[in-house]
Length: 232
Ligand code: ADP
Ligand code: ADP
Image 1 (cartoon, rainbow, N blue to C red):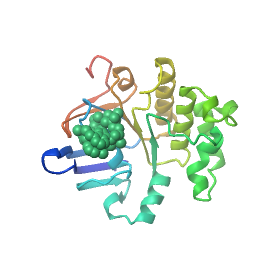
Image 2 (tube, rainbow, N blue to C red; image 1 turned 45 degrees about the horizontal axis):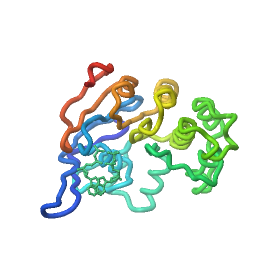
Image 3 (cartoon, rainbow, N blue to C red; image 1 turned 135 degrees about the vertical axis):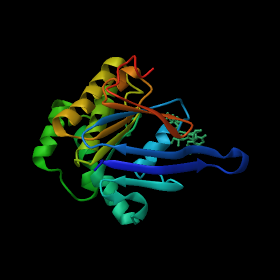
Image 4 (cartoon, protein in one colour; image 1 turned 180 degrees about the horizontal axis):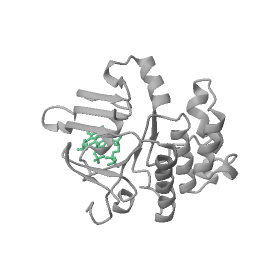
């Protein structure tokens, strides 16, 4: 079974003349243990797809399953639990809490639920993101690349079924971006994590196993074992 299954998803914004069909019948399986890139022109629906898949937004019709769980069938409480336990999300703008340390940010989603991470898993996440000596620093004491690695650690810490990342390297220089991409790649290779990443960057896409191309809210093309050249 796929880690996530999207069937005939549609979403429109606005009404009348101002209506925009952001998703127009997207059907897509996201396979466990794969790193998938979503590419396409600006406005093609990539962010909307990520938000609907991650239960940050609701579609108009169609379905999203994360593992066994159908998002549309879940009530608020179950949805909150699913977001916390089964889904990780990495934003382009990091979205860390500025008053908390890196370590506190990483465990925040679990702390809110009154839980602690599994100790061995937490250790392996901290090793993977290579942040052990930065855990007591606040976000403004960290570089952009380090802040995004904190955000990736926060997304991984509950050992989610799937991690969604919306242009995670969009605000980073190429060196820091490469570190974040390498980190996402290793979370797939070493921990069997499933990762889906929106990107505009052919270099970033070349880190993945599969690229899905959107245009005008539809899946228009798909590619396995992408290279910088083949995604253009
Ligand atoms: P992408 O991530 O590929 O740039 P988006 O999913 O952000 O595409 O947007 C898809 C389309 O939906 C665009 O035409 C965009 O302007 C529109 N859109 C996205 N979010 C909203 C919103 N909150 N209100 C109105 N239109 C929106
Ligand atoms: P991306 O960088 O992924 O393309 P955008 O810059 O298009 O994202 O959108 C950033 C945010 O603004 C998203 O949350 C999206 O829903 C919202 N948004 C995008 N287009 C519109 C729009 N036309 N009207 C209102 N909100 C929008």
